[in-house]
Amino acid sequence: MGRGREFLDRIYALEDQGDVRSFYDETAGDYDEILLAQVGYVSPTICARTMARFLPGRQEPLMDLGCGTGLAGEALTALGYAHIDGVDFSAEMLAVARTRGCYVQLALADLNAGTNIPAGSYAAAVSVGVFGQHVLPEALDHAISIVEAGGLFCFSVNERAFDDYGFRDKVETLSAEGRTTCLSLTKEPYHVKESIDGWVCCLRIT
Ligand SMILES: C[S@@+](CC[C@H](N)C(=O)[O-])C[C@H]1O[C@@H](n2cnc3c(N)ncnc32)[C@H](O)[C@@H]1O
Image (cartoon, rainbow, N blue to C red; front, top):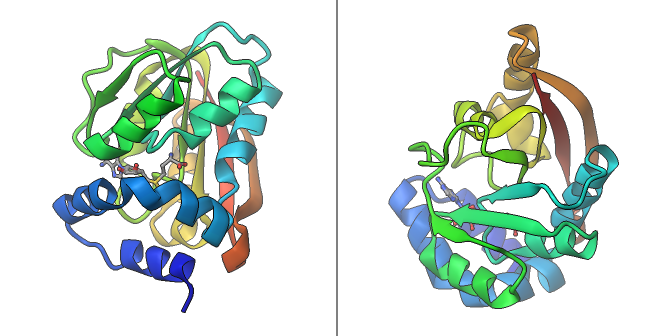
């Protein structure tokens, strides 16, 4: 088994939140090399391009929820976005993100507990590869709350987790409740070298 497959299998086997955080703390230094070179992780770039389809302005503040080592921040910066903040619950992942120099503010936060980010603080938020088995659809309620009305929330989820953990149902419920409008929901490459796709969803907050 390759290093990439082994890395993914270790993540899927994690059940306890504390174990998830410890795993990312311990692997932060190897994360980029394994995800990019071994797994062929392309979702940060794809989510940044999706955001750019719907958010033409480049100066508004954006939030990267579960920013990890900052791959999405880097992809958004490359597209010209000027103000990106990030949160994650792994201090070591944040430490790597800090070295990229593409975030204005980085802070610790647990998406399952709700963050202390005030409602409507951001023009848009992204969350790439974070929601799924360990951050469930209920946490989307808080994620969308930090975005102002008319703003965007763009997130990607591993294809299997999207249906297995109820993300499709949650997106439909948010629409039915009139809280968001789904601007796009597309199946895209995700872990290319493992032949795993992911769903990329862009919501407008109403
Ligand atoms: C697969 S990585 C994705 C990181 C980054 N978004 C990317 O695309 O490279 C998942 C990230 O989510 C973070 N994470 C997992 N559960 C979390 C939670 N409950 N609250 C905040 N961050 C969490 C992990 O620490 C890790 O950095």
